[in-house]
Image 1 (tube, rainbow, N blue to C red):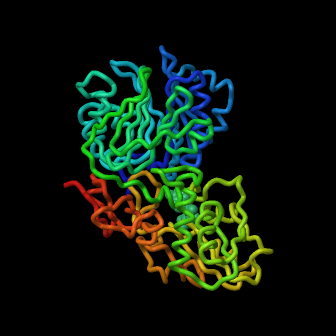
Image 2: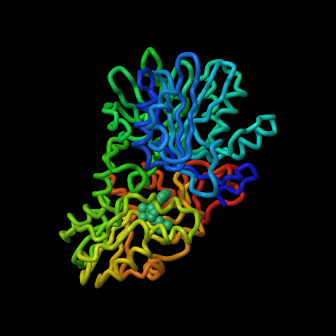
Image 3: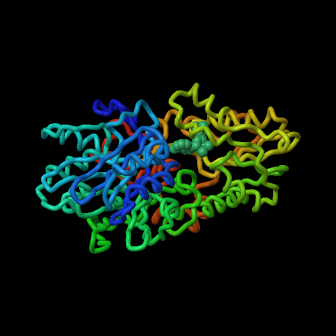
Length: 482
Ligand code: AMP
């Protein structure tokens, strides 16, 4: 449903991380380190493009950043004082090297490289129009429409062309671009995906998350504002406002699961946000038990918050094998089942004979929870109570987080009681939507002033779903363009 499109033969859904640095004698090496810190945002492919004052140097690889970009031979090819990079996470279907970003194109004004985190919701519509006009696409990524829109622009400078292009796209985008003069960052008008500005000596850096600044000892300066474009060049940082102000709708799932816990997003520590969500969950859905156990690693901060609030001891009743990737990466249901067994093992000594509260961040297909509950029971738990630090995920994301089609989402098909029965827990509770907003410092979710994108829980899609016009998700309160 999401990607059935004649051009989209690879059926790619992306979750990504971006990085950019301007004016540093170790630009490529720093970009590789930044991408390594952002590896959780994308593990299937990575790329860096540098500029040496004369030529652009692109380098792309399938797989992990460290497997390719830790080599001195590779880094030394990426010459020059400016560079941008990208990590990518495409979870459905095959992925091919031609889709690996940064994309690179030669324009009349010179070379141009582009890296994108997010997902454009009118890319297929624009692509059809552009193909009719004679544009020849090289990849199946949504991002490439921006390059073609720039190519047909009548504006002269790369910045003006990029402004014209991003005004025509809809969706979620945090972009980092490289020209012969500058590194450019852009955030969509609602700021759905993150993008931060950092400083290392006299050098400025753009990155998806602050953990990518920490790794190279750079200071966090500020978040790029929703709808802001920043141009980093030899004269400093210039801020432009290509869009009408629209308020902000930052992705709340970044706080719940996706971002690294040591990152700070829009001024709030991700780790502390997760702890507060766990505490709120304990207030809302307390249960008599002996031990609070996180589903590692993503459930750990929320479980700590839950344990502190409830006074029930926290313990590592499940141990994770760190040498296995995220279970989601496995392409088939069968393998995904196997993935869960590979990844987690019950710590029998801690759970035998106990009433266990398990804390995880989300139930998507329900595969993980079902396996974990079974595992904890067979290790001798007397009772298993599942607590989830997000509301039920009932709607797919169209803005850059990979989620399965709607009918594969457990919460779309089942009530909470049916889900409890499916995962075979003694009880199951999700944090309420208002509880989640309380944990984020609001009184409740105020329908007149919604600060976050929470479409995966509410079906309230804040950006038009133009490409999905023929087949919108059930119950979507979407702004679907006619
Ligand atoms: P599932 O087994 O399908 O219910 O998946 C739930 C698990 O996947 C949770 O433990 C989450 O930590 C993790 N998860 C949730 N959303 C995503 C996502 N978009 N990409 C990768 N993993 C996810």
